[in-house]
Every structure is written in structure tokens, then in C-alpha cells.
Image (cartoon, rainbow, N blue to C red; front, top):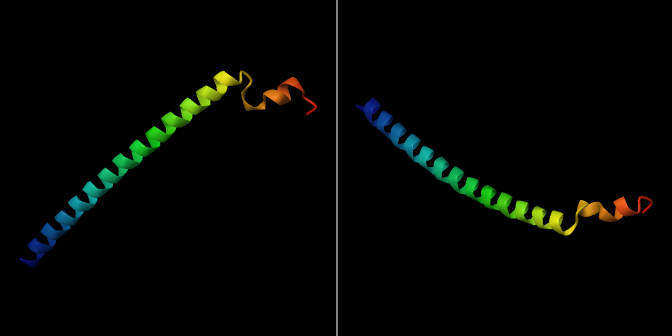
Length: 64
């Protein structure tokens, strides 16, 4: 009887942990995806504003 109770409690604990990890991973994935989108939009804006990238000055005047 004690073994049955222990098995049921272990199953409930495992299910709770699995559900928690799944929800945590889902929200983490959403945050990473939104950050990546905003970063790529910012980089596209920088590239469109500066055709040579951030080091445009160095390419025009290499001694600088």
C-alpha cells in the first residue's frame, strides 16, 4: 500500500515538474524570439543607414 502511495506521489511530482519546465521553456523561447526579432530589425536599420556598417569611417580613411 505504501508503495502504491509513493508511486502515485512520484507520478504527480513528475507531472508537475514536467508541466512547469514546459511552461518555463515556452516563455523563455518567446522572450528569446522577440529579442532576436528586435535585434535583427535594429541591425537591418543600421545596415540600411550605413552601407559599410559601423566602421564606415575606417574604410573611408584607413589611417584613422
